Amino acid sequence: MAHRNNGFTPTMPEHPADVRSDVKTHRSLFERLTALISPEPENRAELLEVLHDAHERNLIDADALSMIEGVFQVSDLSVRDIMIPRSQMDVIDITKPIEEWLPIVLETAHSRFPAIEGERDKVVGILLAKDLLRYYAEESFDVRDMLRPAIFIPESKRLNVLLRDFRANHNHMAIVVDEYSGVAGLITIEDVLEQIVGDIEDEYDFDEEEDNILSIKEGQHGSRWRVKALTEIEQFNEEIGVDLPEDDVDTIGGLVASHLGRMPHKGEVFDLENLRFEVLRADARQIHVLLVEKLPAIDDEHD
Image 1 (cartoon, rainbow, N blue to C red):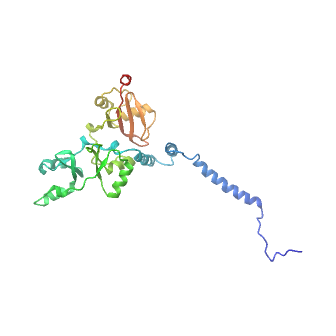
Image 2 (image 1 turned 180 degrees about the horizontal axis):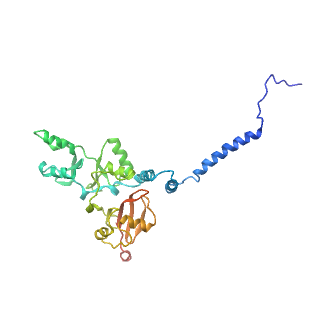
Image 3 (image 1 turned 45 degrees about the vertical axis):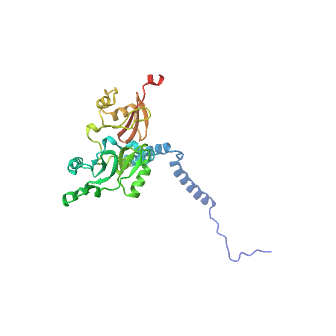
């Protein structure tokens, strides 16, 4: 019995080879795109290697690479790593007449000050410098009425968590406390953002030569310092009590780059003589801040 097609004629490719050619073309394109990111990074270190390779091939610039590294670094660092140490805090003592501490406010030109009652462990609030304008405009002025609530956080708090809290609560400053509830220092939102975008002209930057090296809380092995990379080796040796060579380079950042033979990444840790260095802040072009810890002498370890 003959079959009728009822007017329906199946449409077939005129040239089946063309279909295979199209599939091959699309597959080839997909394979080429996949090859650009293959093998896929399996951890953060491999991902950073891919990013650094992209930078070397001019796919991303140094600023973009630095900010991406900063985002990763924020999740690794804790408050104790970048806080302003207690000894470096500029505070106002509200138990004293305003005339006694007002010159400090004018001299330092900070926008915010921790307010204490007699001693640094008794932080009772935060004074905004702009609120002092009322002191000149009103006959009666009570500084306690001007204080904003102080936020207290532990030294171990991660910077990424702190940044999220700053944004959610619209805070700009937090008081850092140690495990015994004593004041260990303070930190601002600018300090955290600097880990991502680099140095910001900020009222808490330590730009004076005498502030190139800041002593911070004792580390696992001994004393620790936060050191600007532009600190001269001569000053570093004198204050830390070491004898690093200063024949070929002038600054501690230059010595670090010379020792490694390259520009280090944020978060890198390495030992040089009896010192342990950690890169706290750096970008693809230069080192900014180092954390330095003095290690015990080899002879001491065998005693």
